[in-house]
Image (spheres, rainbow, N blue to C red):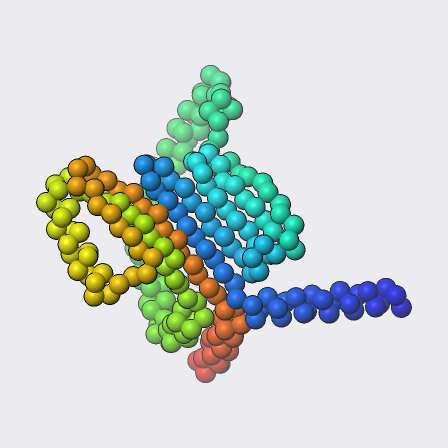
Length: 237
């Protein structure tokens, strides 16, 4: 009986946890900086911040730093993005000969298959055209549902934007700055700060974007798309 109670309690906890995850918004925060030709990026993906989520950070082009939060416990690790040249395997002369032989065999096979490829090229193009038509038909049928997902259940917000811009010609820089200032006066954007470099070409930018996803609405809309799709299949049959 004790084992049964534990099993039922575990199932109840998992169901409660799944329900909580569906109704609590899922958030993604992305921020990146390209300043003085040094790119830095960070992405936070979390359900409840510092409780269940992850953080991916790129400080250089060699490693990506990952920090996972699982019930408030941080688990850090990192993944390499590039291999060290010293660790690359050296190819011997025998291996080079084998590579040359295999390449010659591949060349012979490709020469023999050129006729087949030419014959199948037309078929491949026809398949692509048919797939494009099918995708357009599906989009026309279900575009209202898909639009509803991105309008009602997925929201984007610009948290901040800092930039330092400059063109080769200072006069062109002044013209672009005037156009942008006049545009921002009509439709001001919160958190946008732009400075101009009239002495030299410059492109420095730092931005942050937040995305919020309401999972219950997305899942409900996807379920409606699936039911409608199954109903359409039955009608076609």
